[in-house]
Image (cartoon, rainbow, N blue to C red; front, top):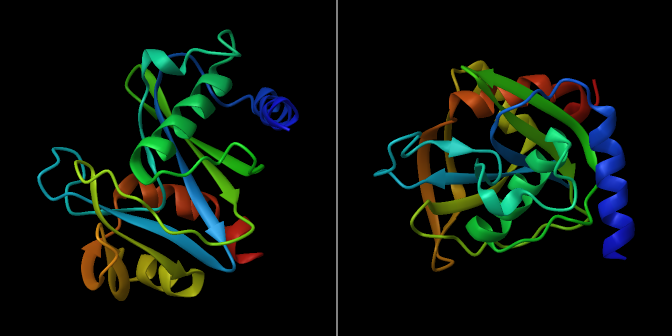
Length: 188
């Protein structure tokens, strides 16, 4: 099964012509049952501390150079996969991408893949990077984007599974990716 899933992913990735050299990182926006997975970054982080991201992601690592070394999309996918396992304890290898969004930054790029899960899952947070997670309704998320990206929700869970209220802004990169994916997410 893993071989077919890997082939399916790399087939999709080869079709996306936007990604260029110098992968800086990658992430997933995770959609399930008309909800999007959000993570709150630990406040002490230099980049985006205290802000919300729509799914796991992070920087490229040498460990991401496997299976498809010559294709930048494959490496970006590998990065997003590894980050998901490290940050929330979930393997998304069997989830097919719906779309991707590439944001160029200086001499590199950051790729976000939109995926859909068959069922919602809990997250097991890497507490060095995230301190809360929640599945948020798509309509509430896009309403928040219209208000500058501020989320107020009592549907978050901390790293011990306790329900908490979170008031935080959605990270700028996440806002741009969600706007790019809007037609897929909202079916417009």
